[in-house]
Length: 171
Image 1 (cartoon, rainbow, N blue to C red):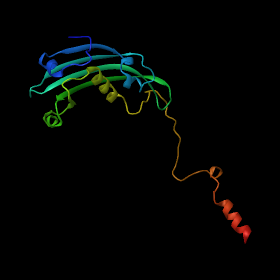
Image 2: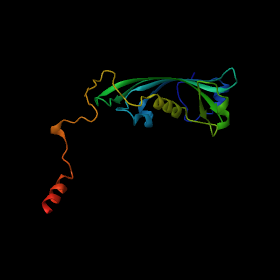
Image 3: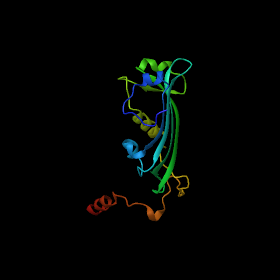
Image 4: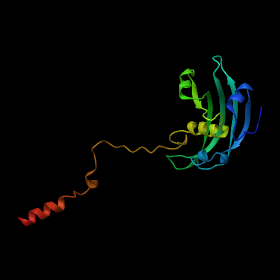
């Protein structure tokens, strides 16, 4: 088991050796992810295992755990969002191999025979973020609105009222 992530690795050799990488990464080392957060503080715990399944399909199993600081879109306050990712990625050389992947196994295209494992970890964390960041305890302000009902004193002035006055004064 390795605790350091190489910049580029050959996934096919990693599968043959059934390599395992485990450790932590600083969120600040993941610039695309850090740009989506309120703060780049914190760490991501990772474990990545390369292997083959019973259908002889090369894959990597990825486990990620992080507590990321985000901005609640309801209260605009900073909060900590726990993110857990458990994913199996099937290693494929071209799009035709994607059809062989079993259900629950997402494709990971390896075009040049090598890839950066840190980038894969960052991609999976970004996909694990909520679409809209909402703090679990953020209050929701309830404003009752019924369609078509605007109080009389809040009716906007008619923009054509001035034209109506001009037309009636010219006759």
